[in-house]
Length: 232
Image (tube, rainbow, N blue to C red; front, side, top):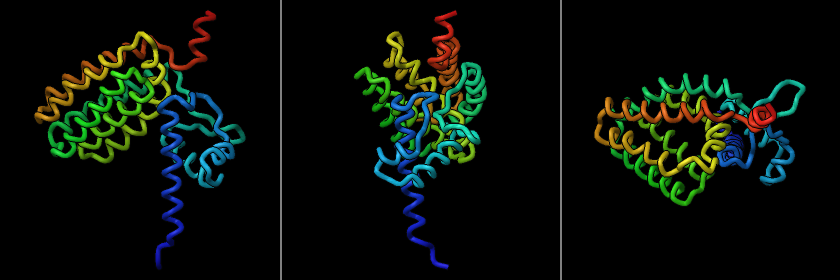
């Protein structure tokens, strides 16, 4: 049976729309808890409601959008406890990815990591937190890919994407947060991966995780929680 050309185009469009919405979440244009109106998005993107609905379903599987029966669709808003719990699960999985990347990352992957790191440093120098978050996520995603383990890569993407959209963008946007210092914290990991040294990569990763865990514990996850703390 021949494959329908229109179906391929539909799938491609869905991914393109999902990418646009994902970018808006990562750069803070779409906020945690914000309602997602498919018809409005379709109008803004110049596409059909059906295509937007397919993209929303994809983003729901990624954890970026929450949709319940008979209720509105919203950008997922994680509680402080949920973010803390996610970090506790993320740490051992990403530690594994970092070690595997150092063991087997081909030269092309290492070059890509260096390029992405330089782009993140550039955003940090420009003091652009939204762009920094996008590039920082791309760097982490490239590390997972370099591990050569697709299951690990996909699991981390599903787990970590909401963190970047809902907590990290808020943390790095704080005036007291040093973007350049955060970018520098990736350098020991990158150097260890480039040298093929799994042990050094894990040590560098552990140091970075400790710093981020501290930031997360000190910073409420959502605007609503911050307001509650302020009132309290």
